[in-house]
Image (cartoon, rainbow, N blue to C red; front, side, top):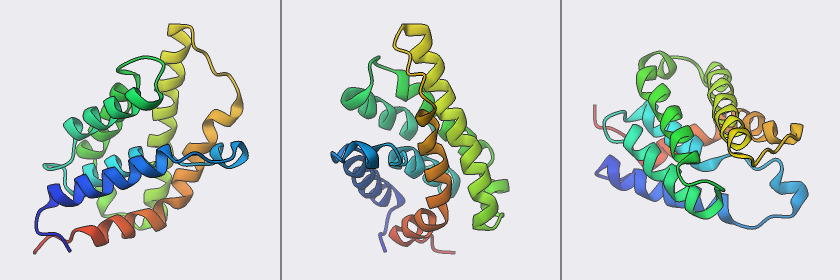
Length: 157
């Protein structure tokens, strides 16, 4: 357990960034979930004052620096995910993990849609249906990811 949620947030975001950037074979890279987005969403739901839109924006800029064709593309999309997490954190937090997975699927699909739209408008379209697979794998992994992230920091009640 960590004393401050911000320390836990930084640790888990760095781990998620490493998991995102580790090279994988192409067949496995297709199903890799968006670990950074899942982590930002978790912290936006669990600790909306420590995580949140600023965390989403910074993590998105880091993703843009490593993988984005446009600076700000991931920043906008991850900040939107964080906003939705902060705005709906009370509703999402009270649901069982399997129902949370459905919400996570919808949010990750919106994330992919925003990236898809920006790529299309900027002339970098990626039109394969495999683009949407990380949203599905992220939602399927949510019941495993959320408790793991929760172990990194427990709020004193």
